[in-house]
Image: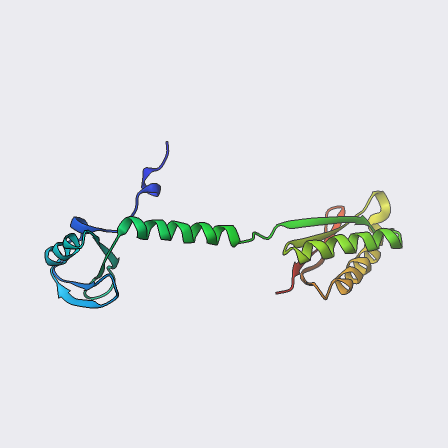
Length: 175
C-alpha cells in the first residue's frame, strides 16, 4: 500500500488558514499588518492570488499573498537541483596481498588516489591465505605505507585492524 500522506502537501492555503489574527505580507514583500484571515483572503482574491501560511510558529502566524502554484513549482525545482548536486560518498575497496610487487602496489595506490579525488572513501584490504596470517605485522607496515603515500588526498579514518583473514584500513578524502 502506498502511503498517501507522503505526497500530500502540508502547507496551508486560503480557507485552510484558521487563526484569529495573522501577519500578512504582500506580493512585493511589504507588510500589510495584522489582519483576520477573511480580510487577507479577500485581498488575495482581488489580486487573483493565494494566501499561503509561511510560519505558524511565529506569534502571530505569518502569511504571504502569492501565486501558490508558482511557489510550489519553484520549491520542487530547488529540491531537484539540490538532489542533483549532492554526491553520496561510496566506499571503494582496494585489495592486495602483503607480498605485493612494487609496480602492483603503485597501481593500487593510483586507484585509491583516483577514488579519493572523486570524493569516495577507500577501504584498503590486505588478504591472507593459510599461514600468511602470522605475518600480519608486514601487512600493517604495508597499509601504513599506503596511508603515507595517500596523505595528500586522504586521511586515515580507521587505523589498520584485523578482521578474520583480512587486515583493513579506511581512508576518507580530505575536505
